[in-house]
Length: 318
Image (cartoon, rainbow, N blue to C red; front, top):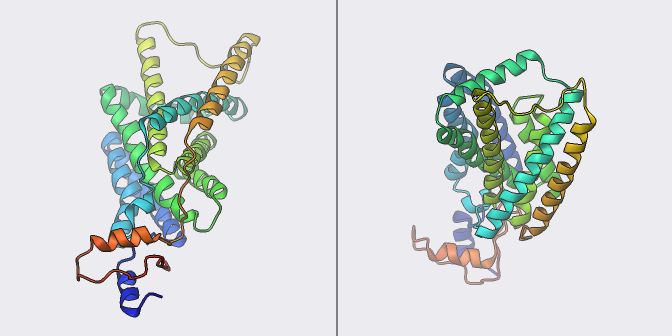
């Protein structure tokens, strides 16, 4: 048994304390509200700087502030566990294959639910603003920044909280749906939700948020590169072939898409199988004895005595 003094030490220095399910949902709602009200305002004034402010101040800042202010365990809350270079490469290859698959599904969605002219005009205006800045800067704004900030919120902070109430499968699905809804775009809800589910599965399977960050950044980088390639081809007078419209789908188009779909699907499945199956630790606030020893060995605030019995694991209610 842990004596009263040692128990008090553990309660004041919880090595595994993480935010509760309720807290993570509230932070998600707060970030959504800030993004809708203030994010849209800043982006309407200046798209590029508004995007930076939105990602840093409204997407990731609330979750980081809550975690640090509450003295929660940062690594466990955000699943910050290292990965190998091999895992990173497999993640990139798998994401490229997934991009092709989701792109095909997006074309099918366009046939069933075509985008309005006003919607397309809005996106053309947004793309024109990005095309006016260097490609490297666009990659930083569209690929690196969301890959870091949005993954910290969704596959880090939020996923950990939802896993306290749901199985891993349900947590992946729920966070994926919340991720799709967060983008506030009905036309992109389905593909973005699929991406969110994929990123969540990768994080849970590998046990690290870094796979989600790499996958998210890779997906956005591909979209940016394609956008710049289309712009470059149009300027050179050699426009790239447009996808089939909702009015006509030719046999030639089908014969082209089907082999691409099969190759991408096989590559995607092979990539998923090749990812290491490390798994995430339990989302409950139960730390192994090693965590207690490590934490107490480096804590010299009051020079308190660490627990005498190494087999005892602290419990924390959040």
